[in-house]
Length: 177
Image (tube, rainbow, N blue to C red):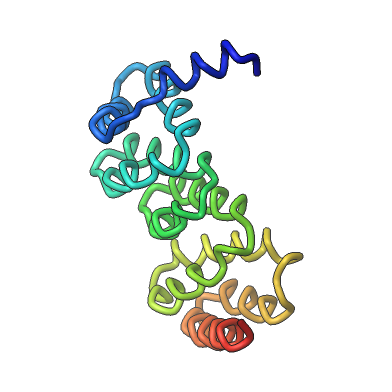
């Protein structure tokens, strides 16, 4: 990127909380191009945008939740982890998928908070499927005991066992660090 492009990029970046909030509101615009441009700006802003996007991840409108999760996933910052994990339980499968893909891109660093969330969510098939998807995609970067967890998550009759296995893995992770 040239110096001129870099300066133009920085001069157009929002520099106050109100500007970022106003930008986030544009994710609800009916014009798809406005939403895409807004998302791109928020992604470039990165971590500072996460807390403002977090304010809309539970919005009633599917499109607004989708935009928030898509943007959080594309920011690729660990600060978005709790919001992406929560979205694994969204009623909209497209939002669940975006959240799972975003967590996969963040890598194994998300495993501890994901396991913590799983322990309390074994009654949600949507959440269990999302966790299975993530662990499946990260399996080559995870210890072998995650195979047992994947097996439990694959079966609706063993879902509660998944919570127990997650707790055991989490205990091992915490005691070894």
